[in-house]
Image (cartoon, rainbow, N blue to C red):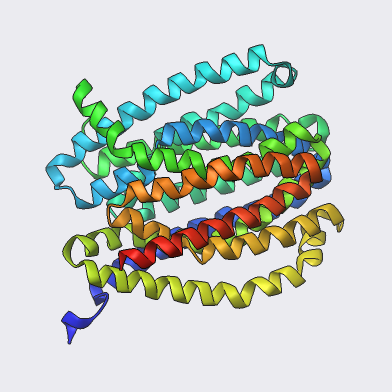
Length: 416
């Protein structure tokens, strides 16, 4: 009977242990912002909050560059490689990430120096960039590939609590708004160095200087996922950035608040589950393709049904949610949140399908879906925000995510 099981007891135990670790991490990571967000909005106000959100969305582009898709491509390689090859993969990936971080800083400095919109608030962008360096150093992809997410969880939980306490203790008024990106960057940097130390100590890693051929191989491996990630962020992270460019800091603040709330609804506990499942699903596919496909559809169905019943409740409770978090029932934030929640359902209903394209080695198809969405979505996003202000970003989100779901369903039906 055991051979007919989609997932064995031992595999289930590993996945659940990692899911618990990541769920605990994400629970803390989402609870802390829920506690910090109301405080910040009351203390620094929507205008300064919007400026900080704009700076963070700008810096997020450089995080995407330094990640280069390694959170998926390198994770998969580590999950499948022999122990003696882990050092070489780790060294290659870290070399590429550090080079990309250095290039990113030069690009960021040039943009801030030459463009007045950025130069006027140059310090907030410089302070925010520390998060890019810390994120570059933190080997979350390695821990995930080794299915040891407990390290990621422990480090980030402790760091997150210290970060939240720093916000409450030191930020007392609108004039202290620059401390927020400073504390955020400090959190990333400290956790990055601690994560590296643990990786070297616990897994007996040694940094091995890599040849040009090794670096080129890593760049080639992560290319399709990198392009996909850039494409995805063209119509996700870019939303706050475009609202910030085409409106003002206050409206950007209202919109950013709605995005953060919708992000919590979408990601917890879905992100923890998909990250915990990904390396295990890769191993199962490597041994039995049909078994991995059945498991993917079972996970997707149960997740879709769960969110189908819970999201309408979130839509109904939107005014209460916004009032509790913001202290006021900002109508701009409420209506934006309701539209974004609809978009959340389309994302959730597609989460494991898109992940399976990577598990099954169909990274080119995965890339084409999101590149196509970016080519269509970016013009739609720009035009919608220009026409309908911040609400245009919410409208376009629903349309784009629905389009991706339909396209993925069509492609997956051919891969059965």
